[in-house]
Every structure is written in C-alpha cells, then in structure tokens.
Amino acid sequence: INKDNLRVLITDPMDKVMLQMLQEKGIKVDYQPEIERNTLVNTIDKYDVIVVRSRTKVDKEIIERGKNLKIIARAGIGLDNIDVDEAEKRNIKIVYAPGASTDSAVELTIGLMILGARPIYQGINMVRSGSFKKLPGIELAGKTIGIVGLGRIGTKVARVCQALDMKVVAYDVVDIRERSEKMGVTPVKTIDELVKQSDVISFHVTVGKDAKPIVTEEQFKSMKEGTILVNTSRAVAIDGKALLKYIDEKKLTLATDVFWHEPPKEDWEVKLAKHERVLITPHIGAQTKEAQYRVAVTTTKNLIEAIKELGVQ
Ligand code: NAD
Image (cartoon, rainbow, N blue to C red; front, side, top):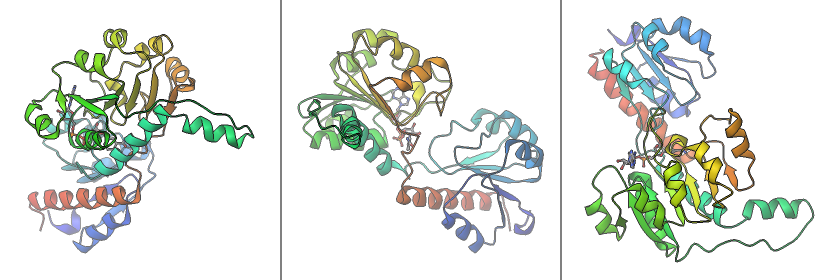
C-alpha cells in the first residue's frame, strides 16, 4: 500500500496535535469523533486503521467486519474496550499510550483519597445551602495505605502518601520486593494481608473487564471498620455487590473514578451510587489538558511507527 490509499478512521474526539502530526506525515484521516455504532459497523470494512479512545468499542463484531483492518490505535492506556484476543487472531497490531496520563491519574487519586478522609464535598454543599456546621473527618498522617498494583501510578501514589507520613504497604501479582525495598514500601504476599492492615486501599491494577474481582466478600469480612477505598483503575477490581453488602456494617467509604457500568446501570449499582459514603467522579482521571496532549502525541508516534512497519510508502 502507499500513503494515498491508506485509510485511517478516527472515531472519538482527539487533541488536534494528532491530526497535525498525521497530516505532516502525509497520512489522510477521516475524523468522525461522534460516529454512531451502526455507521461504524457498516463502514469499518473500508479502513486499514481505526483510532479510538474509550467511547468506541472495538469488539469482535467490529474486528470481524473490518476486513482490511491492520492497526487499532487506542489513545489512552486501558485496552478494555478492545477485543485484544480477536485482534491478535487476525494479526491486527494494537498501539496505545502507556504512561501518558500517569501524573493526572495520580493527582486525581490523591484528591479522591482526601475527599474520602475529610467531608470537603459535603461541607461545600452545606455552605452553599446556607448552613455552617463543623463536620468531622480523619487524619491521614500515621495511617496505612494499601496499594493494589505497584505499577506506574501505584508507585507515584505511594511516594505522595509517604510525603503525607502514611505507612505504605503494597500487593502486586509480579515480584515487587526489590522495588518496594528501595522505596521504603512494605510488600505483602496476599491481598488478605493488605486488607487487614490498611486504613485506605487504593487500586492501580490493569485488569480486563471480565477479570475476577481482587477484593471480594472474603476480604470485606476482614476489612477494618471505616476503611476508605479509592479506585482510579478499573471497577471490576472490587466486587461491587459485596461492597454494597458490607458498606454499612463496616462503615466503608468508596471514592472512585470508575464504575462497573459508566454511568451506573444495574439496581445494585444505582443503590451504591446513591449511598452517602460513595463519591463518584465520571472517569476523569486522564482529563487534563496536559494528559490529553501527551496521550495524543504518544499514540500518534506509535501509530506512525506501526504504519511504517506495514511497509507503507
Ligand atoms: P501499570 O501497568 O504501570 O501498573 C499496573 C500494575 O498492576 C502492575 O504492576 C501489575 O503487575 C499490577 N497488577 C495487574 N493485575 C493485578 C492483580 N490482579 N493484582 C495485583 N496487581 C495486579 O499501569 P498504570 O499505568 O499504573 O495504570 C494502572 C491503572 O490505572 C490501569 O488500569 C489504567 O487503565 C488506569 N488508569 C485510569 C485512568 C482514569 O482515567 N481513571 C487514567 C490512567 C490510568
């Protein structure tokens, strides 16, 4: 193929730097940031490359119908809106932007943790409605945070928490002993050990949307009363129905940027979402000007590289 007949479809809103970078390389794109599912299903067979964020689901149907698809580019870090197995079967290359939104996700995590510890949100609402009372919270210094997934985001969250004089324990599926020792973090071998010690539990794992929950009923039973759960990774890391069951008994708080369905859909999700100790932001972890720019640049660089590898002249 040559550049003139390479067909690239962008199906979600992107920072304009992506369009500029592609244009500079002479790559033409169809930019349809609001394309509907039906249209996509019926036109995907014309394209060699599809570029998405999280809105567009590149599932089995899209991949099967995309007879000419060679590259899927995901402007972001999670791949849970892409059927990776199906793409691999068809030899379709996937490119994305790991790391580009780390700092923004870390900062939101710290914000959610503090919202969980202090009634900032409730206080602001109260003053707005004309009342002015003292609302109690807890201090984080001296408390233990359990980091589930000591990767890019987990590691930086750990460092910030150490600066707040919190004790940090961490659990991961890979061996984190060396990394932990260097950082002064205590590694634990099981999620149970982490849960039993932690006053705050923060999730930073990469898990597929069908993954088994890491924190289930068994862990909720041994959780400390008043534990604050913070999640900016993926909702499936927590068994949500089990959380609903234990939230009152254990006086748990959930401060989360991710939900099982976004927006909440099932009855149990709606119930949880309305709970007074559940604070949800609408998946804004990467929504900063800086992160969006970096995501676009990294994805585009990786995409241009992958197009080169196709042998496009
Ligand atoms: P990363 O790959 O650097 O780190 C993830 C860590 O989780 C790894 O160390 C991995 O071994 C560990 N892990 C995987 N499965 C695990 C399991 N079952 N139990 C324990 N540990 C496990 O990823 P990252 O860049 O730090 O991102 C972490 C998560 O944050 C991802 O899910 C990503 O999608 C999410 N994220 C969300 C937003 C947002 O908008 N809220 C923004 C950026 C990233």
